Length: 289
Ligand SMILES: Nc1ncnc2c1ncn2[C@@H]1O[C@H](COP(=O)(O)OP(=O)(O)O)[C@@H](O)[C@H]1O
Ligand SMILES: [Mg+2]
Image (cartoon, rainbow, N blue to C red; front, side, top):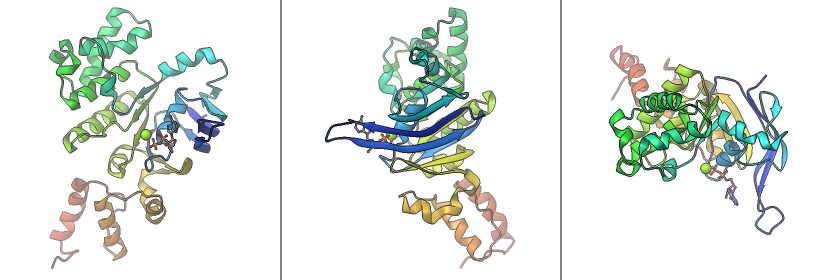
């Protein structure tokens, strides 16, 4: 059984007004326990609406959202429990830090869950470690942190709730490449340690390709593809027709393959490309000049 499933879900904003907008149309997707799923699509394709369906922040206008095979809206008063199990890090979460200290901000979620002070302490420290925040930062005001540190504190706040499903909506938006790599690596390491099911929303193919096992492509409110990352780039033409660009290094390696050079078709980072290409250059399989 899938851990999370959407069955024929449709979401409309401003229903019944001249501004009515169908953000998701008949979306049916199954996500298994322990998977790392990347959610990608052009701006306005419905990524945020889709993930908000999964923790009950949005209610589908039609269709069903299932967690462990149970309709999450069966007992509307249980939706709070769903939000503990399906944790959400919103886009630009640093704007939601509001406590006097970083510690209190990270502790906010676990506190709502009614855990003991001792348990909360342990969770705050562990979560801070996972996102790479030094313990001495916990006593500071969140306003004293750098942009990247604030972002990491916000992610730690959701990790500290130990949700079964961790959803991150554009967690690298606005960060420089170092901040981006740091956050992606931490999230990936966390997922591997706890076997948490992770959904990571991004409009960057590079980000998604580095961390996700499978990729959900949304296009104009529809689920256009749900594909293992390794085979995603065999659909270059289709992806480009949806306004999604394939990473530049992947494109170069695909071109080499077309010309008969034996390189793998799932290389997404410059580091991996170097690892694949250097021996070929040295061995004379590829001629430069
Ligand atoms: N609160 C809202 N009110 C009206 N329209 C909205 C609202 N939120 C999103 N939309 C519209 O729904 C569509 C999908 O939006 P969204 O889920 O935010 O996409 P994405 O996260 O991929 O950019 C877009 O056309 C967007 O303009
Ligand atoms: Mg969005």
